[in-house]
Image (cartoon, rainbow, N blue to C red):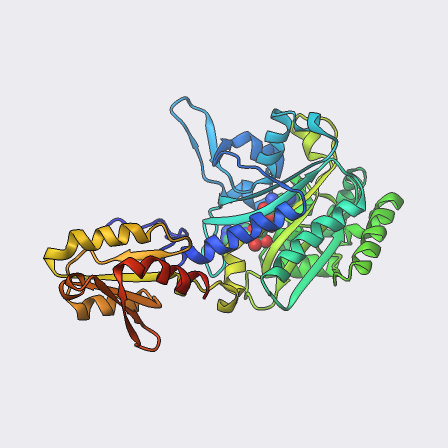
Length: 421
Ligand code: HAM
């Protein structure tokens, strides 16, 4: 038997209503903040991610699905969406429409990580990219959006962690200091961290090796202690705005994030109810990326959030219960099938009504079992006796009451039942 690939999931009819509810809530939410949707291709030039995310990051060094196509071009299934969105922004000259471009997305991504609860190889994110503003009020809006979406879904016990890793001008100096303070322990570091110490020392913070983590914890200076005065001013105003907006946060000096494009503000929202993979979302400023990918020097900030992790925390009660809007039509007797289908066709005109019909000629008992399995509120029974009397039966599955209704009154009866419920 051929099975799905490890780390991917089929979403079956029991799952998809929840996904549709989340997706439509997010589309509506983003519209209320004036963000426009962008959809980019599932695969891109491998080069985009190497240049955008950075060669020494976990994503680029070991998690990308890349291949050479028949024309010998290296392609990659997108492992994140910031670089593709920036590519599209530059390519379609979106800055010509105005100095600030606010975009959002909701799409699937691919990373070859070790699958576990909340971590898949094909997963989904929603996120935003606000391109054009260098000011801390833009950072505050982005963090507010990330936070308020969880509030909309009634998620509790959130922790917002923020930090600043300073502008790019301080990076080189800090990396030298970091290298110096860790080089004494180089031989104790894991092979990958040893390599990172030489090539891109900031990425040592991403190590999942406990020994590396301890060495970093005890010896690495905080980048926050080397930021410029302007960086500090930016960060302080961001904190003031968040305080005024009553968005609770914690300044975590260790938060550097695992992608190379960040400058200044970084943030993550975590939940203590998620287990090991506790990051609900993450983001930050990337003031150099647009220029680095061939566009004009343009500041930007964004975040992305995992939908699978959000789903793990949403209460069933948050999902809308549609049961009352669905009826099951039980058809009994070969002779009346055509008449029954004709009746159902007229019912399809009723707004908001979902109708599941019997197409397998099962016994009444089996059809009732099916109706129960589908969790419907009402069953319409159309049999030979009923048709002869120009009637149908409506059974309320919750209290087992049964009414006989004239076929000519059926449409208005159902309309009232469903749309006044
Ligand atoms: P990221 O931290 O790599 O950032 O991913 C953001 C979120 O995606 C994570 O917090 C997590 O909820 C979810 N996620 C990541 N990997 C997986 C996985 N394997 N399975 C399930 N969920 C996962 C970015 O992707 C940046 N592009 C965010 C950003 C946007 N920064 C600026 N703009």
